[in-house]
Image 1: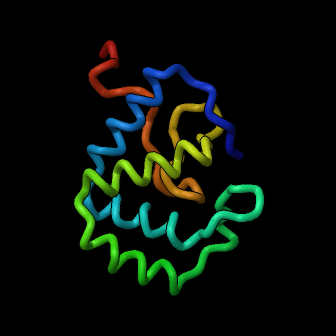
Image 2 (image 1 turned 45 degrees about the horizontal axis):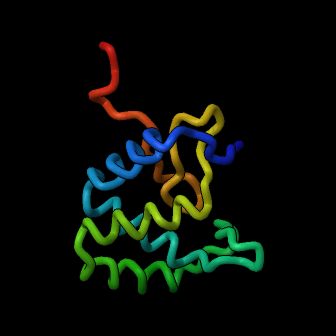
Length: 111
């Protein structure tokens, strides 16, 4: 089950920073997943519309894009979709939710 985003601006900024810190390989995968799920008439990208051929092409294209640009693009798509896991702890940064980042920062923890 998924929820819609309803967090503070700080939480969205934290999720953006967490996206920027992902390994480049994960950024390429998430970016290619967005590209392989074209927007539907309602603007959402559904994983059942996933096109494996588009994904392969997008992975090749992603290899030529720097990590910062990938992260910014991915987070833009994520903001449009505005989906998070049940409980609201993690933002989905791909259409299906297999790639997520927390809305909090590790350095925010009081451990």
